[in-house]
Amino acid sequence: MDVVLIRGDGIGKEICESVIRVSEALNCNVSFLECEAGSEYYEKSGKLMEDGLLEKIQDCGLALKGPTATPIGTGFRSINVYLRQRFNTYANVRPLRSMKGVKTRFEDVDLVVIRENSEDLYKGVEYMYDENTAHGIKIITREASERIIRFAFDYARKNGRKKVTCVHKANIMKLTDGLFLDVFKKVSSEYPEIESDSVIIDALCMKLVSDPCAFDVLVAPNLYGDIISDLCAGLVGGLGFAPSVNIGDEVKIYEAVHGSAPDIAGKDIANPSAILMSFADLLKDNGEKKKGELLRKVIEDMIAEGKCVTADIGGTASTSAFTDALIERIRHEDL
Image 1 (cartoon, rainbow, N blue to C red):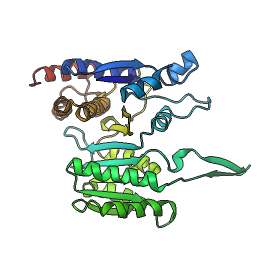
Image 2: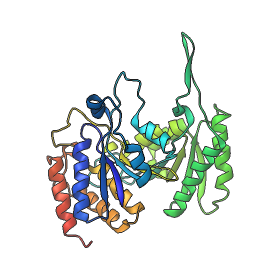
Image 3: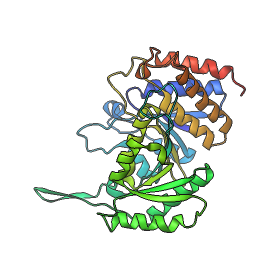
Image 4: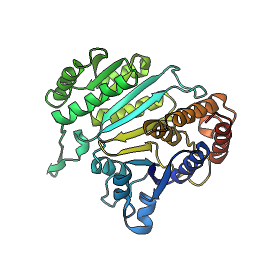
C-alpha cells in the first residue's frame, strides 16, 4: 500500500526515519511517498506544503505525519487543522494505555478519546464586533454530532469496548452542547449492549485525574476533545506515548501529536514511540494486523525492560539506538 509520509519539522525527520527503518525490518507491504510540509519548508520555499501533496493524500487515502510547526506571523493556520478540514477527517481517535516502564500516577489506564474534528469553535468563525469585543461562534450541527457519536459506538462495538461516555457542558450551553447531548441519547439507544452515560466537561477533568480507570470510550465535541485528549496523554506518560489518527470517509491521517521540539532537533535523542505506535495502528487498520500488533508489543516490551530507552523516560539511548534495538527484537520474532 502507498502511504504519504510527511516528516514535518524539528525532530519529525529523525522519528520518521525510525518508521522507515522499522517498516523495512517488518517487511511491510508499504511504499512511502515522501512530501514536505511545515515551517521549515515554508522558510525555504515560501509555501506551507509541497505541490502535489494534497493530491497524493487523496489518491493514497493514507498518510503518516510527523510534527509540523506553523510559521509565525504569516497568516497561515495550522497544517493539522487545514488537512483535517481539507479531507473532512471528522473523527480524531486517540487510544491511551498505561505502559510498564513509564512512571505515572496510575497503572491501569486504558481508554480511547474520540474527538469530533470538523466543527465547534475550531471552525474558526470569529470576528471583531467592535474594537474592544471579539466574537467566536460555536457551531454544533445535528449531522456532525450524529456522525461522530455513531462512529464512537461503532468503534466500541468493533473493539470490544463496554461503555461510551458523552462529554458536554449542556447545563450552560443548552442549545449547542444540548444538541450534542440530545443526539447522543438517541444514538445510544441503538446500541443496547454498550453502556452509555454523560459527564459535564469540568467534572470529567476532575474524575480523570482521580480515577481514569472508570472510563472506557469518551466522545466529545472538538474543543473539549482537544483538551481531554492531551490530559489523558498525561495520565499515561505524555504525548510521547500517544498515537493518533484522523479518520474521514476517504482519507486517514495517522500522526504523532507531540510538538516538533526544535530545541532537541538533530541531536538524535527524540523518543520515536508515538509515531511508531501510530504506524502500528496504520498497519493494524489497513491489512497488516499481525505486524501492527507485533510492533506495538515490541515497543511495549522494550520500554518495560528499560535497558535501551530514551532520556525522556530515564534512559540514555539515542533515537537511532532505540530504533536499532527495536529492529533487533523484530528480527527475532515470528513474522
